[in-house]
Image (cartoon, rainbow, N blue to C red):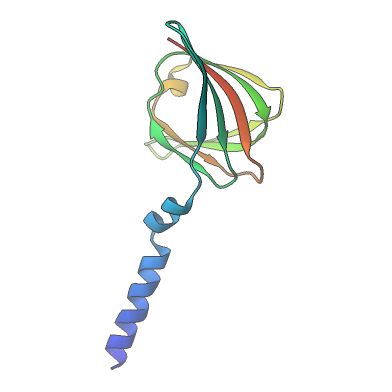
Length: 121
């Protein structure tokens, strides 16, 4: 009987502590396309506190204007983590190789981060 109880308790703990369960509950970015032309695409991008954006390659240079700042982290596939503190009014030009490499983004701050982002084709 003790073995069955231990198995059930362990199974419940495993299911509720699984990273997959937590990842499903994490907010994802909201992206609203503002304009699109043959030369660029402009979007309003926001990520709630605790939210995560999946790892994708980002082709092309991007210009960004921070509407509402916060604390983001980039997580690269090799395990490297880079903090990205942002303040309202910051502008960024993202054209370096590390800006276009695949990386996930996590909002580790307490506020929703909002950015106007233009991807140049």
